Length: 157
Image (cartoon, rainbow, N blue to C red):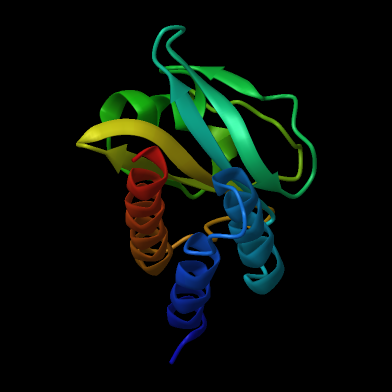
């Protein structure tokens, strides 16, 4: 079993822990990925504020960021909020709509979180390595996104 498969199993346990509130579970996921995947240098969850048309930072692991609120359409996260599909940016320095939050970031992946078919947020991962993310990372994070949505459905009931 490869690392990402093992992390799926650990993530399921973290997300289903009834003794922690949902936000704490997300923090634990961020910490797990940041610690176990060497090129996941920053991991965060943004959730949509539809009234303001912004994304708001919820949980993260890595260096603090000034980007706690991102308008829809701005930066990679904002693009994913509008386009409703995952995005891998192999070299952020040549991405026209990139918002720099750390000069060391070289690549980024953002995966939407859908709840009742609505894009309610994103999983955002930055790397200090060019071209760090692969299709395998995207599939992994999309699976995590589905798990988060499923758990969110339980929390909202």
